[in-house]
Length: 386
Image (cartoon, rainbow, N blue to C red; front, top):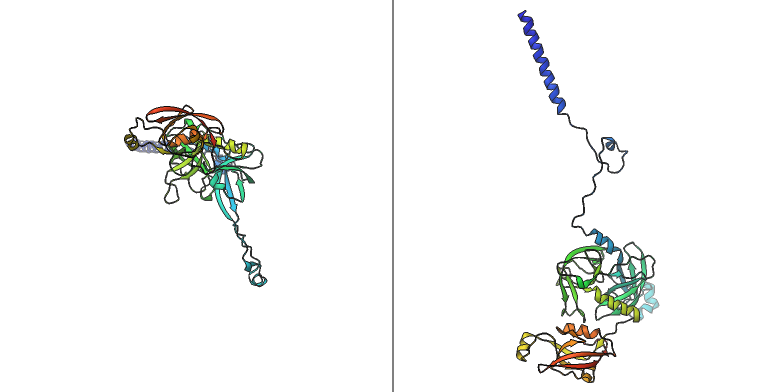
């Protein structure tokens, strides 16, 4: 009997041990594999217990909406210039042609690349004057791949702006922004065709506003940015974080020819005025009074006993010019033009340029520390005037 009991106890112990092992192994079995759908659901892997696809992560900090809005209106500009050379007499010699063939000395064109911005559904494109000046042929390539020959509407070398025109339908047009509301630190995107690699977007901030005295153009009021601008970006768009046009990329400061984080764009307000004048008359008409000016420095103010350091010193007057006829004299300090304060020579130049030739303008000068108001009949600014 004792023997049967021991056999029974051993059997029960073994059975219980097997039961506990079975339960432990069964609970640790891996769960069914869940596969997200990615493409063809007929694939065997997709037949497994497929869960819903996760939505893409939100584009926090992305400017893709601004880029997508502006990029279609930014174009590549390809210009070509045929060298103007006469044929060498040897090229017309039959003996020479027999051995060397009929060679055209003018066959090799000079070509260059730049960018532009479509600003009108009628096909008007803003770009830099230095992109299209002296070009014999201008070709525009749109972001959607379309190509068209362009004609030159007009140029303004003093601001380095130009307007060209193409004839295509359903053109993308950029939205003009408010450059006056831009502030240092605002995020901007530069769009163009650097080095001919294709349309490219770079990002940066506005580093400074109202940059002048850079001796790049005659009328300077640049937006400075650290967004990368390189060769081929000229004439392209500088846009804000919403994709609105703030300026036309024009120049960089560089000792190597590549971007070092100091680029300059012409404000859209200036570009718009120049564009409208070119479209209307083919050129820009500006006011002029015929003076040479000098900045007021602290040293000059102290030397002449001046009580102010704003304004522009009249260093010279063109004989029989508008200023001379109106009574402005060398040594005067011009402090306002049509009730607009003159802070420096650049401000004075821009204020006078905006005046309508033939009209009258009230100008206030400081002469021997006394203010004098003069009526000046504005003249038309001649080409290459200082």
